[in-house]
Length: 389
Image 1 (cartoon, rainbow, N blue to C red):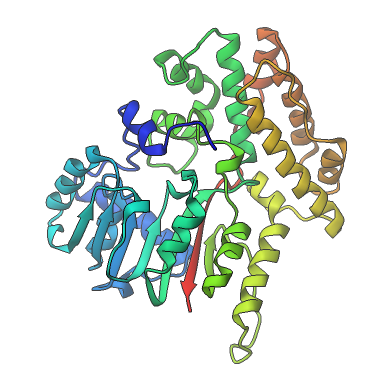
Image 2 (cartoon, rainbow, N blue to C red):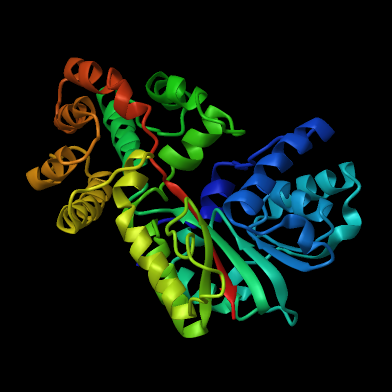
């Protein structure tokens, strides 16, 4: 049993709304809509315009930024969120853009207690489902509410893709200790975080402020191994429900790209290709660029040791005064067989050493100056779309 607050309790206690965008006018809305449409149409292959007049359920809707985009495309929205603090902003946003009539229903309740009598063409469960202790049961419950051919979109921090974000959290925690900062959400902590990650964060195409990102990601108690997820585990969980892999961002397979369209792959073949593809791309998720191993053995070694290290690092977050065991030598050796820059590999070795140092000067020299690592983001956050057969 995980002894920690729910995501709702974390936000509520800290009076924090992790709004992705601040949609004060039509130009703000248009910019944000372009991002969401790019995600769904180009990366996930779901033309938003074809969802016009279709039933869409968003669980964990927050202040409604995402829902507004789908409502503007004519979707009939049902919105669910357990946080009573979000609804005033949500209704104000829908009224501001004249989309009130697209809301078919709102529910201020936990998704575990939500039992709709209707089915949906699209269910979006983004940004929170991975934090739920009963996430597998909720996922199975949600797919039962899809119409035949309907889609469910899930987002989550990928276990392996979050490697670089875990390193950033480790550097943040160690730095707070060496600078005698106890509260990771305090003004001093946020300013310290800015000295570490501010420059790197400013290079991202990210509509969220630095402070919002730091609180919702690096300082969040939910960045830990058992709250990460993988496409592999989700797909396997949904196989008995006759669900089929549809798409993902980042992409995890290339099935049928060069095949003749009349050669129809079975549901089992499609799902299996997705499972194989996710495993083969593990190092690419870590470094955010294409990484190819010379052998399947090297790729397997890298993947398994990365998972073990993330688990060790997650445990270290709660006891950072202890020494952190770095990845095994064969992990580095497998990387040396790829085209990853040798300088980055050497920086990683020094980075791990500095995390175990009790010297602030040593930390400052090797962590703060590790620009290659601090600016390497990997592919932490994944989207997966499954379709009901």
